[in-house]
Image (cartoon, rainbow, N blue to C red; front, side, top):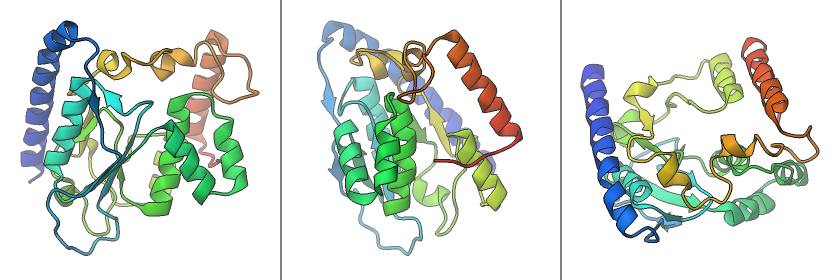
Length: 241
C-alpha cells in the first residue's frame, strides 16, 4: 500500500505541475481574473463515521480572491477529500476568531506579529486546538484521500514549525511519511500565490521588517540571527508561545 501511495503522490505532483504550466497563458491574457475561495463549505459526500479528529480542512491566506492555479489546488483538495468540510479564514477573520476564543495574553501575542505567515503559524495551532481538523497551507495538497491517510485516532506528519515537530517527536505521536501524505507547490508557485500581495512572499518581507513588533530591526544580520536561533532550537527544543 505504501508503494501505491508513493506512486499516486508522484502522479499528483506531475498533474499539478502540468496544470500549473497551463495556467500561465490565461493569466497573461486575463491578468485581473480571480476566483473566490469559499469561507465555509460542507462535505461533498456526507458519510457519518466516528473520528477523534474532526473531518475539516482549514486554510488561510492574505485574500480569498486567488489566481486560477491556487483555485485548481483548492479544487483538487476538495475532490480528493470529499468527506471533509472546508473552512477558510482571511486575516480579519483570524483576528476575530482569536478575540472570541482565546485569552487576552494570546491576543496580545498575536497582535505583535507583523508578518502574515507568522500570524498564520500561531492561528493554525489555536484553531486546531479549538475545533480540530486538518490544516493545509494554501499551496499544499494531499496525495491520497485524507479519509484514508488519517486513521480515527492518528496524526499525519507535520512539516511546519520546528518547535511543533519537536513537540510531536517528544510525545511519540504516530505519524505518516510526508511524501505519502502531502506536497506543496505542485499546482501553484510563488508567482501565482503572491501576485496580488503588495509586499510579496513572507521570506522577502522579513528582510525589510521585524516579524514581531518591538524586535530588532530587520535585515541580513537579523535574518542570520534568526537562522542561528532556529538551528539552536533543533538541538535544544524550547516550547514557547
